[in-house]
Amino acid sequence: QINLIESGGGLVEAGDSLRISCKASGRSLSRYTMAWFRQAPGKEREFVASILRNVDVTYYSDFAAGRFTISRGDNQNTLYLEMNSLKPEDTAVYSCAATSNGMNYWGKGTLVTVSL
Image (cartoon, rainbow, N blue to C red; front, side, top):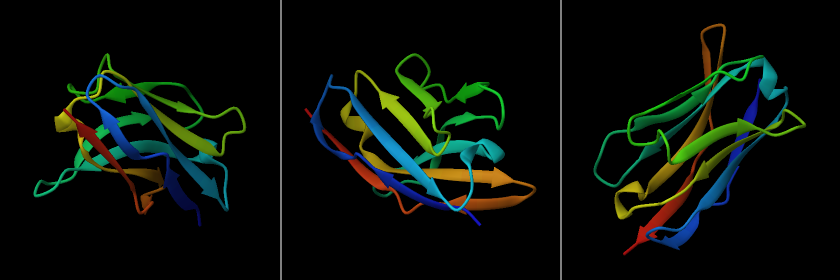
């Protein structure tokens, strides 16, 4: 089993950049397809970005494309989400997820708040 812990969230201003992390323990992230999701207050959880296991193929939602970058750390045990040109509508709890062989694992999330 893999355990996921997100960090790096906080309060930023519109236009700022922020990098959040998802640290894995138990197993290497390279064995999993990884993704970031977010859930804004009063809204359903939505997909942000994903990166396939063992390869650096990435996918982004429309709102993330061009502003956000998903990547794995060199040690393969940390997943990152680099967010640029942040907007107030990006305010949400950001969670990472790992998927392999039909099993899904989730972290508890880190709150990102973007002020005007």
